[in-house]
Image (tube, rainbow, N blue to C red):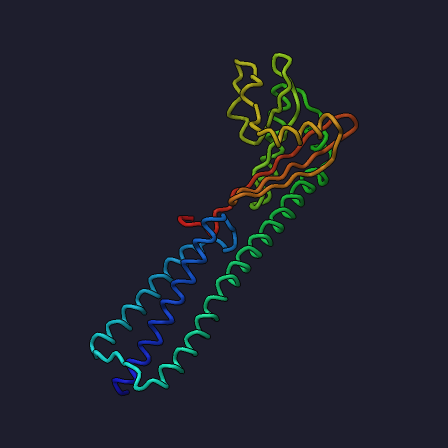
Length: 264
């Protein structure tokens, strides 16, 4: 293989590596800035390795060029003009790839969100429909140790049965000092129970923002059955109302997905 061929090959490798590096960096900057969830678990580690591989290729091609010192200059003006036209076309093609990458990333994030929504709704239906006795226990709310323990036990059984079962709390409407509040009970509530001390409602307050309170007011006060799903930066939430007669509870599912983020 001649020196000219080596330089040509090394230039192709170097330019290709730079282009790939730019696209990779653009991809992950977009993911970080907009909190997109596209890649599967461990894909971030794969990204780091691919960056090292690209840098290795760039370094190798640079060394070959330096060793042979064969940077070429176009032979005549006609070739220069031809190269300029070809370069403009190439630049246009390369630039057009950026919006395509962005479209793929946002589409992937949207599909991930829809898939997660279906999974959470399926989990809610499974929890309520497969065992009507447990569903009745959940909806018959009274603030006492019995209800707290029953709820924790039911949710613990479901979480142990399905390894993909997300975190879930049972939300109810109550009052403290005549002020309406929303309480949340989950499978970790055993830790809050002390045999010698009666449970305190303040320990079970479910923190909400104004938008969530407005939604819960519609469910408990206006008898709405509307589902509420939200996702933001890898946080997926589903409010799933369940009514039996005049009694109402809301199953609150939450899951955090770190895939596709730096350091995940």
